[in-house]
Amino acid sequence: MGCRVLDPTMSVTLLLLCVGVTGVLSGASDHRYKADDTVPLYANKVGPFHNPSETYRYFDLPFCTPEHVKEKREALGEVLNGDRLVEAPYKLEFRVDHDSKSVCRRKLSKEDVAKFRGAVAKDYYFQMYFDDLPLWGFIGKADKEGKTDPSENKYFLYRHIHFEVLYNKDRVIEINVQTDPSALVDVTEDREVEVEFLYSTKWKETVIPFEQRMEKYSKSSSLPHHLEVHWFSIINSCVTVLLLTGFLATILMRVLKNDFVKYAHDEESAEDQEESGWKYIHGDVFRFPKHKSLFAACLGTGTQLFTLTIFIFILALVGVFYPYNRGALFTALVVIYALTSGIAGYTATSFYLQLEGTNWVRNLILTGCLFCGPLFLTFCFLNTVAIAYSATAALPFGTILVILLIWTLVTFPLLVLGGVAGKNSKVEFQAPCRTTKYPREVPPMPWYRHTVPQMAMAGFLPFSAIYIELYYIFASVWGHRIYTIYSILFIVFIILLIVTAFITVALTYFQLAAEDHEWWWRAYLCGGSTGLFVYGYCLYYYYARSDMSGFMQTSFFFGYMACVCYAFFLLLGMIGFRASLLFVRHIYKSIKCE
Image (cartoon, rainbow, N blue to C red; front, side, top):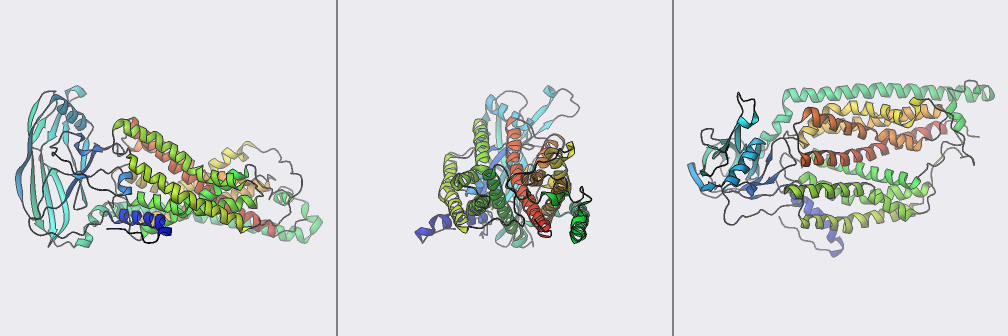
């Protein structure tokens, strides 16, 4: 697929969209073949089965390496995903069977044997793509039966691979790979070994239509017992939402009832101070928060991340991210993040100026760096680790340059344009009550009304609404499961937003009732606290639910999950604050502010 840019003024945006479309379509092969045509088979990577981030190039292991290794040209998303496709040493012609065909005969040196033994001991698997259909297999097996001492284990390398291909007329529909358990090479000891690598191919006709060939990979996440768990998760979350809604409705009705009764009787209405405490701080409740530049930047970045998430869900629901569409998600994330940066600039600057901020340029720079800065520092560290390990997760210099160009030519200019638009919007902050000249003193609070205990309470309920679904997402991202039920995930996301908004509003009400008017930052921190709970779940998942190990995998897991949870914090904090602001404006509109 080619992309031509016609109008120079639109070049950068169209280039991005071309990159995105190419990345999205990279997994969609619609090749038709004639008999004896060579069907493309690409070897992708090898790595320990339990460490999904720790992958290496296929020919880093001493397999049959051709004289000239042909690399497949890859889209941006594929490179970010750690894919490094090269032409495999096996030749598969359309509808041509092979029985024990030799790939090569080679003598493995002691170093080669040691490499293979280390790989087999760590459960290395290989991944290939045949006509854009993924296939996997283990490179060997370890014999540990009846042996208590690991030094007694025997290690064997598979040398014979069986390919079974299903076809419908002139198209490839399915491929399965098996290793021959009888064709083994003992790599337990450091000694030179003569090996002949073989492969067999069997073609079978099928009636499965070409349009359904990817369904095989998505069936696992749609099995009845999995769906039952997903629906249980949603019902559990819905019950939480209903309880919270009822709780909040009760509070609102009580508040409004008290308003009507007490303000109808004017002076006589001030008897019960504790219940009506929030009314007495009407002159302070709209006093602008401290660190207003940082606050506005957090709101702007949270709004951008919320928009990004909605766009990703739209693409997922229309079927763009079908199983093994290599790199489509990463391409979409980079492109949409770049194109939505104007939203962050507009939101942050307009709100900063509503808070009577003066240095809007510094605020704009802070907005641009608030999420990108920590992400870039994390990436630099993890990329250095990947380079030290010679892993495929290490991005080539060219890819890093492309990302920097996207940030420089698209993200930053759009951020500035959004900031300028926000500056020129001249929207005033809508406060139903006038703020007094001097702030009212906040009365001493019991320990459970302080910020950290309130954050713990605020984060727990939204987290409890999503934790069942979290396991499936983690098992997909940090494992080998396939996740395709995006509709259920979207419902869970909506429930998460509702629960976050409700619990933050409830806690804001209690805070104001206690005559504590410093609610701005508290609402944001309480809303975002679910991100901290998700990071806590990361610790549990790593040690209790996964078999990940090693410095590289550990640093990748906790490094990138820290960035994801930070994004969650910013997004949900924005939701919590916006909901609280609507609530506070509503209740103070219903009273007479003297």
